[in-house]
Image (cartoon, helix red, strand yellow):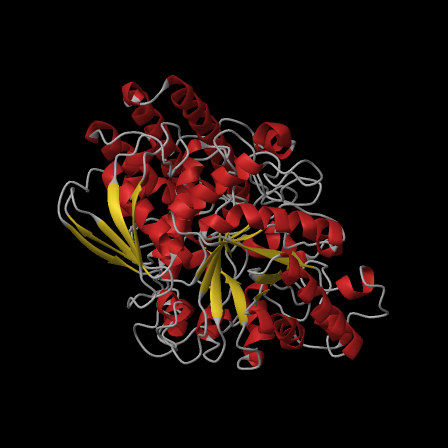
Length: 640
């Protein structure tokens, strides 16, 4: 046992989440590191009053988390009392997935170039700042490169650079991981094949892993995207996903490394993309090694503004699963729209799969509570929205989703309101005249985006090339049907929506009862998912008594009005925000409001051509004709 006195921790006066500094200390505490404490992983205990604080943990990293927790309490005005706090992380591995490329571009990145500065001098202070921010919210792992990986990341030159980054992150409790390309043995190693069952291939991976651990003794492991969107994988050799994952797992096992094998796949044999992950992975349940986790996107298609949860979460009781969320807003307005994402994350994790009867939530499955004997480790991943922009994320409010992911990964039971309020208090001010109205903006923002983009179960009707604006009319000769909007909305004179019932793609039966029957019936399917599961007549009577067509129009109109309300709120709170940030956010809200009108004008007119029904009297008429909207060519420089 060791005990020292530390001073920590005043936060920065900037807009960068939380910091930890030894300058101008305003929290003093005795620190006790005791390996025999009854705590999980890097959990901590904080006890005592303002004058006699004690932070206890089993590890130095646990002490770091305790210091940040105490700093957070002080910043939000909850430290001036006796404390008796015990915290343990919900997930053992809390990981950011960076989609950064070796040319410093970032796929689906809307905040500038990669912070890793590949091919340039190591930006030590920038990476330290990044490490502090992540440690302050409990994130303890980072995948440095894109899941669309190139074999070059495993070259000696790049691994040496990865080791330098790992050395900077290590004092903050953060391990590095790498995305790997399945063809690396052939492309990088010169072998004739990358077949996972060939001895020479397995030996190549074992040797490569040994090289990595010589450079990075605490290396976390590999993230793999295989046989998806044209990337190579074990199916190229007639092997299964488990064959490929287990080969890598065997190479990593002597070093306690893990494999995170993504379940985001496309199968040309399936009539419904929402079925594909289940069809490929469920038959492999129980065939993965103990150090493999199957990484599943929150929804069955692709990070849509709203999806039902992926049914695969309830289909693999003998396999370790981890959820993957997108913090970067690929389908939610990039870094231009204020969309606080914790309600989306929470919606998924709180969903009941019924795989073991009522109460089998995705949170309980992935934290190991539902199947404790199966889960040797637990993990959760978020696709990062971080770049070199001064505010890190391209939009000051986009920081809140990064913050929320970390806080949720640490404590899955925190509410969206709790997390948003503490972020606002630390990032701006604790003045109630500011926090109350802006908190309401944050908590309603995801639903507003669903309203003005894809209400009532619409999905994947974005522009095909950039996923920013609406393009439900999109047709691309030669492209796969399930990459295009018309595949998903299936609008015709009779109605709109994708039939996933037992008379359609049978996707409903990928869910356990009572969900399967609830989704299968148009009368019991939740209206927010109606067009996801059903092809619905335009004149179908909704719960409100209005027709489906009227309800669609009203949702689009409501989304615009909600954002216009945000603009008014932001004007009113101007006295509480510095001029630079206030103006930057004002400008973003103006773009968001304009984009919401773009979505409304395009979708209401396009789908109106099928419905043949008039726009309701209480809905504002489109401002631009459909033919003009179809000609819009997005200036990606403006929107990135």
